[in-house]
Image (cartoon, rainbow, N blue to C red):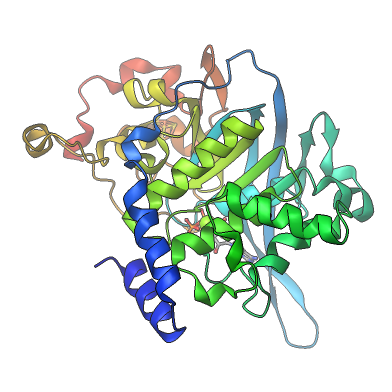
Length: 384
Ligand SMILES: Nc1ncnc2c1ncn2[C@@H]1O[C@H](COP(=O)(O)OP(=O)(O)OP(=O)(O)O)[C@@H](O)[C@H]1O
Ligand code: SF4
Ligand SMILES: [Mg+2]
């Protein structure tokens, strides 16, 4: 049994799950198709308009020393100069190992953190220049779905109040209209509106994430940052939440930044995929090109680790095993931050930071090999 499932079962048992909610959870699991059915068919076109434009985004967290006189001694360079766009109506998958700065990127884009440097444009308006009151208004259009459906819902609020909060905060409805919209939102995300007065602990993990999705949708946003929205859920429930997010995107024309740990989780739902390493962008292109023609050695390594469903192919193929751990963002390596683990690294990689540039239409990479492809000759990355 998966860890998340164990957690869900224990929590639900403690919280006296009713036969109704149990039945709904089982029904939920049975009714929805498998994750593989999520493959996107229509995505944003390469010439689509950018809804979000990120320019030179940096988020450094200061580390202080001293009890009485606080002195900044170091900086965690969690996000260290990102430039990319998110097209209107697309899903941009953002992947990378734990600690590479994915959540910090999402939070800095929607101004939950004040970026150290850089600009974030939403519909051509620079969010970093807005006053708190102006940003408050913008939050109607920009929402977030969190990883942990247990921690992200206030246990003392009813489901109805949780979903109604954005409606009240942004003055979007009053009185009976709030109740009507809450019920409608519950129906949209597949929750029985009769449970409106129940508390989060009375629901299963998947249902709680549906509550989080309903809350995010309440203000009719244009852009949603989904930060690992399925990784705390049991595998059978993950497919349902992915399907739900897909359906909602089609119905409401939403744009997603979908954050995940690994490429397998985002392939089928992303129009384009961005790969991050130690606070920097390594590669960004459409999902198929990234899989079929990765140009960055880090992407190559991630793809070589994605399981192949055919057992014969899986048994014979070689994986690229990266040596060592991800370096600390307190003291990132010089030059290309990946050089300490890259099987192709050469002298220049230790000195020069590679530009993140468009090497083919719509295909962005930060690697010196794009200038010197012959450096690949004779190197077998599976043997490093
Ligand atoms: N508020 C903070 N103060 C100081 N350091 C932080 C803060 N938030 C994140 N960090 C550090 O910044 C780096 C990036 O963290 P972040 O949470 O963005 O990574 P992530 O890619 O989302 O990781 P995960 O996959 O584990 O969620 C990490 O080294 C983390 O310890
Ligand atoms: S720049 Fe050098 S170290 Fe960095 S990914 Fe490319 S080859 Fe490897
Ligand atoms: Mg994270």
